[in-house]
Length: 412
Image 1 (cartoon, one colour):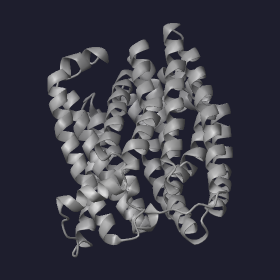
Image 2 (image 1 turned 60 degrees about the vertical axis):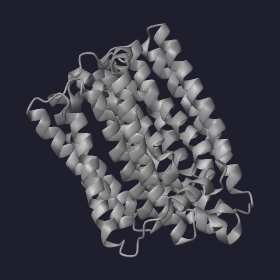
Image 3 (image 1 turned 180 degrees about the horizontal axis):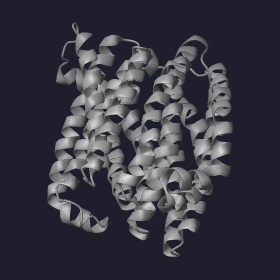
Image 4 (image 1 turned 135 degrees about the vertical axis):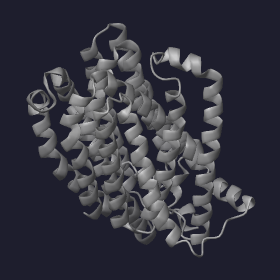
């Protein structure tokens, strides 16, 4: 409830100002930020190699601290490499994704955005490990408030890239807040040797070989598909989808993710005690369905009227898009937090298999609609395919939660 309260407040701020933003920025501006954030989200996973998700697993504090340092070093090294590669292939990338009209420096802003997102994730997971959920709630509010405020100011100043710069500003403010808190509590925090850092990375190598590719595939099934929409259709179409993600998918995911953070910790505790996490799984599933059923039902029936009323007539088409995508968002809200069961029970290989099928299937669905130049065919096939995969995910995580398993690595 602590995390839900903070997350709800953090999402209420951008929701309240979105009608203002849709009047300050065009659908094309929203389309550009959607594509940039999609690329940055994919890079964020590469930067951390998903080691931040392993921070809550070690019982020994020394191993956790070493893993924390390793995650930060990976982020910095990956940032340097990606900026160098962008310098070499900037023209090719701009041409592929129709970014020739955007400022040249925008491409180099993408790794910077990925870096601050990655570092913020590492810090957030460190906070989760220490069960300081109130601190995490404050972090979300600070991030959201600074993001929203700077976006509005830059929009008033007619800066078409204000949404992108605002996102960067929000992440930097969040890092500054958690970083100060971390420094105050890190009196006994000693830098580990490179040998210990290497050993900690080796200890949780499954996260690189299974969980990172799986997460990349998961992001590809969302963010890479946004990029595909940008290739087959115009930026305004991507802008409509980006607005939907802003007001529906992202807030719902963040609330569900807050529940997922608590679920992960409690599920690990139950595994240590009983060998399974079924009771925690069952309670969390009931909470998620109870929270989701009424809001998503209302969105499904009222979306076209809502978009036309609050965002202006230029955005009414996005309301129709929203109806098509609502079943997907409902199942995402329920299944995403519970999918961390794969992490808790160290079944990353199953998660990788599921993510592989999801990414390939959803991209095929979008491509079919793109080839036929039908936005609604692409959206419908994408939504149906994604929904079916979430049903499969729920079944697998439920089955795993009932198994009694002895975990070795989480007891280190």
